[in-house]
Each structure stands twice: as structure tokens, then as C-alpha cells.
Length: 372
Image 1 (cartoon, rainbow, N blue to C red):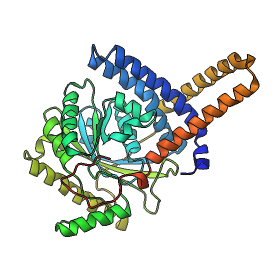
Image 2: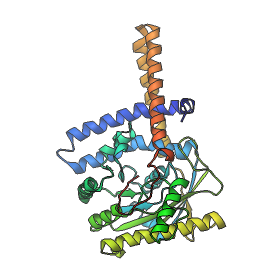
Image 3: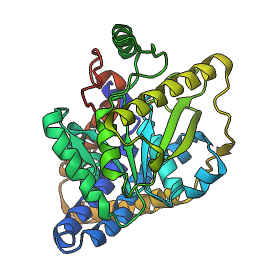
Image 4: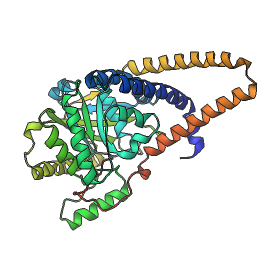
């Protein structure tokens, strides 16, 4: 992405940078002072603190881009959203699927307690990655010898989680692109598997490990299928879109097979069904047989952004007063530095979400765990 494109996001970047650093510092403070004595209290505090940052991204979806999200789900699933722990299993078609997941988590009241299994590099991302690390996200190195222990320890930490949480897992391992689809089709041909058209072949080791370790205290798997409207380009942080459809089907954890092979096959069958569903949508414009529910935009993200803007404007005004006795060139240099840092930060975050910068296409191996 070119620098001029990032300049569009400079005002948002300054807001996100300054408020994000404040949130990260507050998280660090409570991590040092509270967590050693009460992990439960720390998590409750962190949930509310981190939402002050993450709600800004929800605001981008709801109030800036005015994106309309349609959720297809049955009545029972809707009633249970936000009232139970869940393992969320989703396809990964665009750069901002994770953000749509956050939108649904926010509506369910568990944005600040949403979790995910991600690649290790994500925790080093400025602001957003640090906030995830403080929030108990699991980060993998893509080496099963190391990741198996990391996953086991991570799942163990969730046993006494004091609030409802959603744990997201993108089992395709990387974002959907045509190049990766062709690699998946080649692999399917060699292994005599159904050839995918709209999804990639899932890597099942991570899912099997998750089910095996958390099924005793997580009652459900949420099968989430994401797509955008027909004839629209894939959305990115720079190119938002006008419509998003999401189907959510709830599966009782107790209904899943008991053996590792059975769990792996269940996951593979699930993605065969997803593939057929997306093919029907792209060819016949029929997405789901479940009832559709429009996810209305809440006022809370807007209030949070307005409060942050007011606080930063007040702080900036006081800073200018304090700097009024300083030479003007020093003030100008300070503003230039802030703008440059904000631009670079936004560019890093946007580039990290772009699909062409994700895992290079290669023949998928079901035995290899790759977490996006």
C-alpha cells in the first residue's frame, strides 16, 4: 500500500495511536499490579479497558463505513449468543473477517472477552497486537512440536475464565486467494478428496486439540460462514464494502465425535458443506435457509469515539498552551513526528491484514497446523 493511501487514515491513525497507547499502558499497569494476585479480577478489568480500543474499530464498520451485516441464525442460537462459552469456527475469505467477528461479538456482549488463535507475528503489531497479548490470545509459531504445548497451556488458562468468551479459529490456516485455492485443489486431487471451489482444505490439528481440551467447559461450536454480496470485490481496511452476510449454526460440543480422527473428519465435512453453501450463493444468490436478522448498529462505539476525540482535543489544547513558550519550529516538528508515526502505524496495521501478505500459497497439509 502506498503512503498516500495511508494518509486518508491519518486522523483516525492519530486517534487510534494515542488512545491505543493509553489503553496499552493501562493494561500493562493492571497486568503488573492486579494479575499476580487475582487473574479473574484482572480479566474483568481488562475486558472493559480493551473495549475502549476495540470499539473504535467497530465504529469504523458501523458508523464510518455504514456496513450492513445480516446474520442468519435460528431462534435458539440467537438466545444463547453471549450467554455461553463457544469455539467459533469460520471460513476466511477476506482481510477483515476478524473484524466482522468482533462486530458479532460486540452485539453479543463479549467483545472484550473474545479470544483467538493467531500466528506469533500478530502480537508484535503496534497497539492492536499488544492489546491482544494482554487479553490472553494464543499465538503460534507454526511448528507443531512447539505449538502443541502452547495450545495445551492456552486452553488450560481458559478453564477458569470468569466471563463468557468466544474462541475464534480459522482452520483454513490462511486467507482465501485464487492461488491458494489452486494449491488446495491440486492437493485434493492427489489425495482423492472433494475438490474445493470456495474454501480451502482445513488443517484439523488445531481444531482437534481445541475440542479435546475445552469440550468439558465449552458447550458449543459456532459454525460461522462469511461472505460478501455478489459482484463485490473482497473488502479490505482501505476498501470497505456495503454488505456482509454471516450464517451462524450452533453445534453442541457433546454431539461431536470422541476420537481425534472423528473430530478431524467432522471438521472436514463441515467445510465441504460450507463450500456447497457458498457455491449455491454465488450461482443462485441463495445464501441460507435460516431466518435473517439485521445487526443494527449500537450507539456505544460512537460514544466511545466521541469521548476519545474530546479528551484528545482537550489534551492537545493543553499541550499547545504548555508549548506556547517553545520555539515554533519545535512545535511544528512535534506535529510532523506525530503525523509520521500515525501514518506508519496505520500502514503497518493495514498491510498486516492484506491477503497477499499472508502465508504464501503451498500445497496444504492436513497434518500441519497453520493458524491465520
